[in-house]
Amino acid sequence: MSKVTTGAVTEKFFLRSDNGTELYFCGQLYSESSYYDEETAMLTRLRLFVTDTGDQVYSIVSGSGTQKSRRHYFVSSIGRHCRVSDGIQSLVLPVDMLFAAVFGLCGIDPDRAEELRPAFEENLRMIIG
Image 1 (tube, one colour):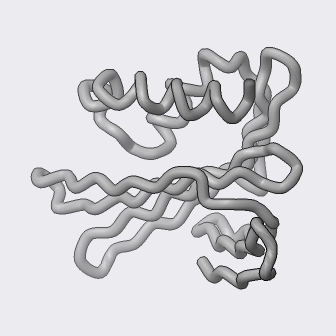
Image 2: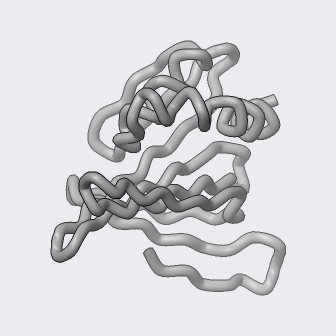
Image 3: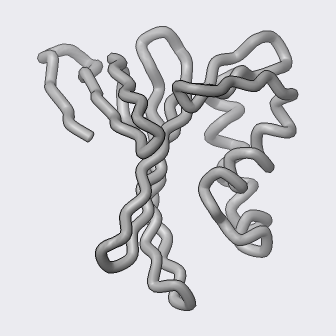
């Protein structure tokens, strides 16, 4: 990921994904966290961006030793549903299903997902209203 400051409240971001897609957008970093899995020695960095158009971008970068995985997902609100796209494929699902989908896409253990879900729900609901 590269970042260019525009001098305004928002910034320009560029993300690359292992699926070959690239995503350019203007917005702000809304939330960032990292998780370390001791069993696999995998470090996962999760970033949530809010675009100038009010959509969300999730960036997931995982790595262990020489292995690295980069993914990003663009999420836009359509009433009580969300459209999620990885740049190649898209799906539309109810907002409640988005929580399960994001945890699955991030590779977060289901036991850990329940621990993280309240904070994630609060952040998502603040963004999508």
